[in-house]
Amino acid sequence: MEFDFTEELKNKISDNILSVKESIREAEALAGRDPGSVTLIGVTKVFPVEYAEAAAVSGLVDLGENRVQELVPKVERFSSLGLDVNWHLIGTLQKNKVKYIIGKTSLIHSVNTVELAEEISKRSLSNNVTTSILLQANVSGEESKHGFAPHELKPAIDKIMDMPAIKLCGLMTMAPIETYEGEAREVFAKTRVIYEDLRSYTGLDSWNVLSMGMSQDYRSAILEGSTHIRIGTAIFGNRAEYKPV
Image (cartoon, rainbow, N blue to C red; front, top):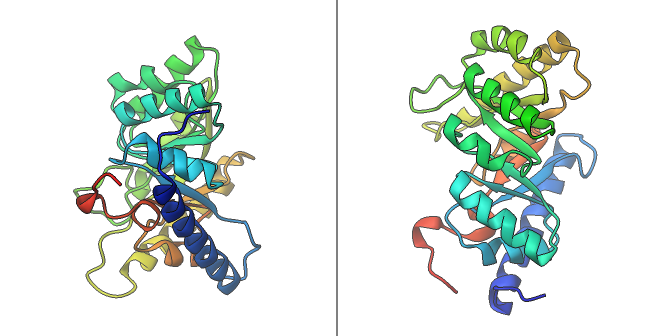
């Protein structure tokens, strides 16, 4: 098995993963949650495949990508190496790109329109697979962010629940860059309330994923009930300063 990463890169990423996992355990304990209740997704956006390889070899079993054109070659590379991880698509997904990722993802976090869900359903059905998805909720109300406004979620769910070959698993949200301390946590708290209401509304056993929190705010997200956090910088470094090791 021929990996691309250097020992230096692997050690750096492994140390970062251990540090983040310890921070997660502390936040879980502070929130009174069971250890291991939070899934850590390492986000390799922009970074080349050797960073993802090093993370996987260091024990990270969930990896995320923002763009289809980055996810697909990484999935193929991992397959050739015999590396088995759960791949998450967390960035904006265009309808014309859906066909490239069907059957390749463990979870799509960023379903932001009913039309996108319809395309995923159609492509999944034709490929004889079931695709797990989250609905992206724009709880902060920022125009720059995609997703359903809170009042749009139930009408969307009514339509999506009738679509074949889709498993609806919960919500994803992004907090704003804080303009005051605690702003992100407020958004996470609001999202948790919406998530719990929709759990009752849907009655779905599969409704068990609340994806929120990134490198700058994941501790607040865990305190407000996040089940999946999406961590890039804290594991792989600053993308703006990325230089090959």
